[in-house]
Length: 169
Image (cartoon, rainbow, N blue to C red; front, side, top):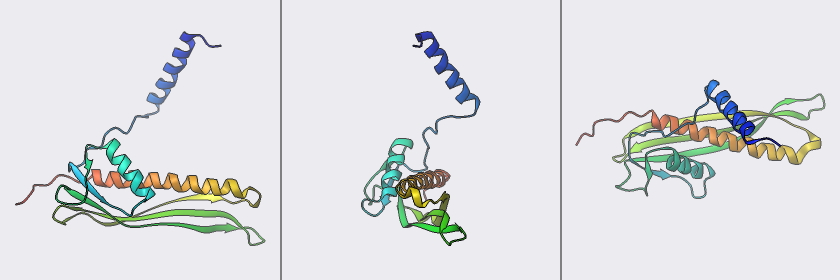
């Protein structure tokens, strides 16, 4: 059983190691607008994660589409795909490429494009095994979830890169 001082020393050592490797929390992103509307399909897993990331990690509020929205995010497409990458001598797939392709645009309240229609594609390689079908299906789902999180962060990075502009009347 560890004493209290050993636990504290272990925690301090772990924190020092994390700080030494350059790890730091993402923090709050500051977006160029205070409100955003999300034009997404109902029950969209991507939309749910994007909304959560905006609420938790930015200074921007999500509002219904309308005059209160300074910006509107439009999801134009979200396509998941699984392709055979390599096959063995018997013609069985031994590796797959999983991909998730997202297409979106961002407009201001007047309909001017802040981000023109943009496509982002992420992919992962996964090995296959006939003996581990259930675990591979679970791995598929985890990889797709990881890719979705990656897409959300890339979208937020692009939105955060927008510079504020003068509001011409």
